[in-house]
Image (cartoon, rainbow, N blue to C red; front, top):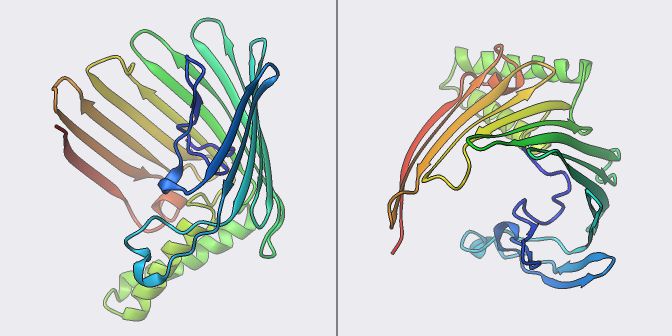
Length: 278
């Protein structure tokens, strides 16, 4: 679903079976790393300088980045894998990750992150807990995500009422540029306010086949537990060809009208694609 501990590093972060620490960074971040494996665990220190491109050339380059210091520590204690992270930008952020295996097929994991207040906002926390089940023919993930920055109760209902009025004005007079601008600004505020998650409680389920097959198929659903709206997504890719990979995907929203995922009506997409490499 998402990784609250992803303070700078993408979810592709992992320690490979041969002990090499592999890191992939989002959007080609410019950074310097100092990594050290010791008998008491892995220590990592990263520095990302501030880069702010001129607006005239920003469209041709990677996104600008804020100066950031990031410290990471990882250690396996018996059957428990522990990870710690401490980040400093204009605010402090710190997080903890725990994971363990239960039996031969199940993995349990959890993350907890604290974000310092900024721009007048309150301090906030993010938390995630979940389980992964790996069988011979199928894999499944079930997760719960808590978003302290999300709106709850009366605040969210009042915001929905405002959005409903904006939507009704647009439906009545869609050619009015003021109505179109208001609808666009409202939609933008939803996507940017809390990275697209405006509630506090969410659940995610994903079912997929093992990656050793010639094809990759997955079905994913994300559910807002407060208003029971969500998104369902399916994807399929075939890897049986040597230099060609056909793929297809689809997604649709569900829930009551004016719930979070159907606030601006039904949303659905269908995609077909081909990857070709030489």
